[in-house]
Length: 216
View (cartoon, rainbow, N blue to C red):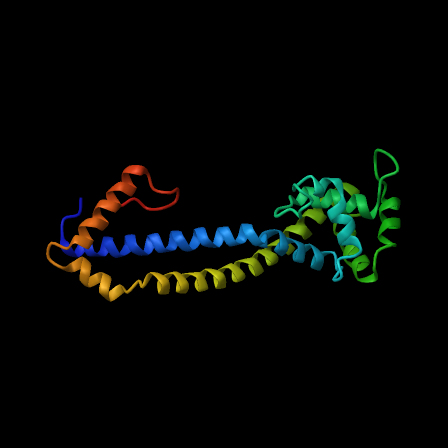
């Protein structure tokens, strides 16, 4: 499969660090699931979005809404909320419809009961929607998506730090020395190179994880 010692050495190094990256990713996913970091990060984003820093007002009503509670099990907070579900839940909390069609007057009356800072935000969204209730739902979705992009940035920076720490820990515990590995791979009739080649063949035969490049 591989024609030269130099190419075999390069492929061997790539294979070693590919395995390390997979281990780091798997460990990060396990920690994320165990500590429920995605749901906690989403909760922080919702708390900032609804301007309820104590999470005892609108945030509590939001997470207790049936549309949101149905997104998770065992009374846990969801790790993902569709923008449409967010818009419908918030609109139902702020202005519960008294008929099949919510009127603009009902919406404005509900907005009047919100904290002043959130009133300003909702008034801007109503204005952007052209004082149309259905279009206001779309504006709520856009508002939610824009904030979640920022929350995703917070989460990404956090996971990058965690993955970096995990990588250092795994490399240290496994004593992964690039120079030593390179010397072992580049030697004549190197057992290490042969074993890594066999492992690479086995991985290719078994099928690489989706998204990873093939070696042949």
